[in-house]
Image (tube, rainbow, N blue to C red; front, side, top):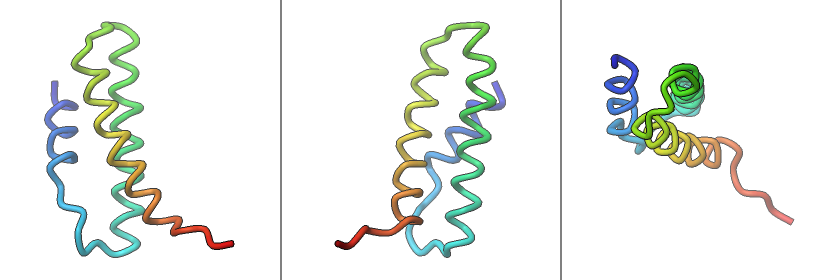
Length: 73
């Protein structure tokens, strides 16, 4: 399960002091990981894969929130 190792590395990656381009790259990498894990999950229905996808998605949401900034009214 090379994907789970990559997912674990992504989760441990520090998010502080990232430039905007680093955040964009991290967001795209997260999307690639989730889609790749999802293809395997469809066949195996392994709960470990679903848990990994959820953790990656949480981190991706935090990255995306930082990229888009806060909405002001």
